Image (tube, rainbow, N blue to C red; front, side, top):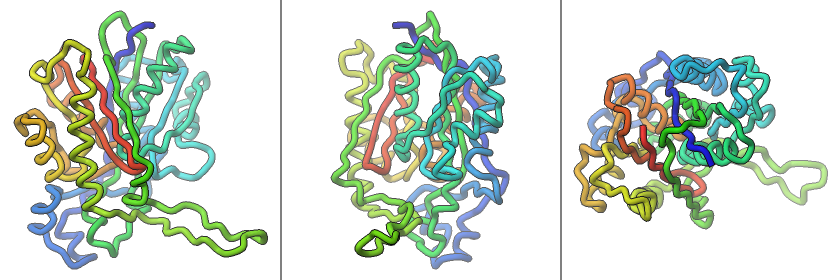
Length: 323
């Protein structure tokens, strides 16, 4: 098996900044209340760009930085819970936009854990199919599935996308992943899809097509998911947490990160956060953070990094990598 390395990272955020004060015009809340409970001050919201548009723009940046032509891509995976439509997949739309005509394309639906899952899926396919170049994207337009009258959820979410180009390499890259799910708790975080209302259905089953969340249940799950994910991904690797420069968590809520850091007995400064400016962007969250760290010059060759995410399903996962 050859090594697989991140060769380029990119991200794209819509230009519209929606502050907590703007949210307070829609629901009964205020900036202090939102910041205190979530850590979010503002988020980016699409004014019409769909998920495939955002995914494509993030991908173009990652491809340029990797020095890879889109026509040389053999695999495109998009992680999203807010696709443009059921079919075609966002990945196929991105392929069309990039003119990446040699690539196999598909989406995965793992909510906020999606990018971490997609990295490991891409690595496995690159090894089994001998693909040299792959594109992994996490992209969301959560604003279209947000209930803007529900102050428990509309304060949290934002839109955006992040992408990574993966290449086969002689250097160490993706070292190990740890992926888990707990489907029995799936009703803690849901977005409904198509209704069951046909000439043959005994009764109508109507779906609520906006985000519904049991915040307390998700918070409990998330803290244990980070703890488990971080510990398990370094197990049997001969790499200690002291050697890990950064932990890049899914940007869901500051309270979750703070509690997880305490449980792991790690300083909060080891966890890189940007949720104050972008909110929770689900599957786009981790690559958006990685891109910001790259652009700030925080990622040095050889750095050990842990990506850890948790989300609807319920799902969670972690990846240990060397930059």
